[in-house]
Length: 89
Image (cartoon, rainbow, N blue to C red):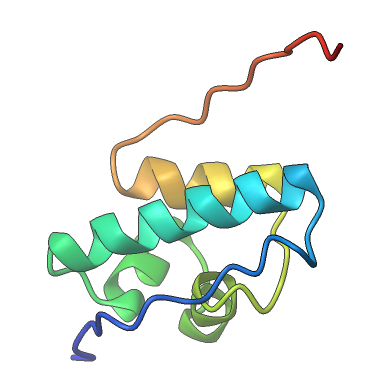
């Protein structure tokens, strides 16, 4: 069984769009929750029908997952994704 680590991926918001920054923040929160619960990447990946290397890339912020993939990850931890529209101006 793979042991979870506490190394947080770095979010460089200067290089990301506001939407990408939000996605990175959500993924970082999900990763923290997985670790807090003591769930390995392998166990979560198996539960949500994903391969462990794919989950690792997502958690390292090496790839930008689709909303569907983020939703699978969130649901695997008992969360739902909520979206809202905010008027800019």
